[in-house]
Length: 76
Image 1 (cartoon, rainbow, N blue to C red):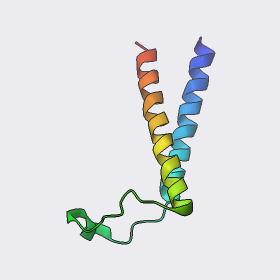
Image 2: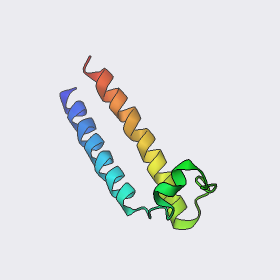
Image 3: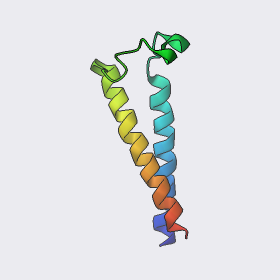
Image 4: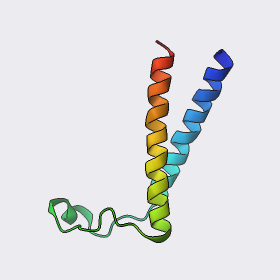
């Protein structure tokens, strides 16, 4: 059982590293801090490669959170 936990932790760290890589590879939004108070109507209308990176980042973020919950419950 300890080997399975170790493999799960290694997978968790790899997911975290890939998530950081994806976030750093995305193009920044051009509006900057000016879009915080309004004006950004196309927040969720991603297209093309950027849209694919956005969706993959969201999916990987969800997997990361679920993995963190599983690791937290596993050691109780």
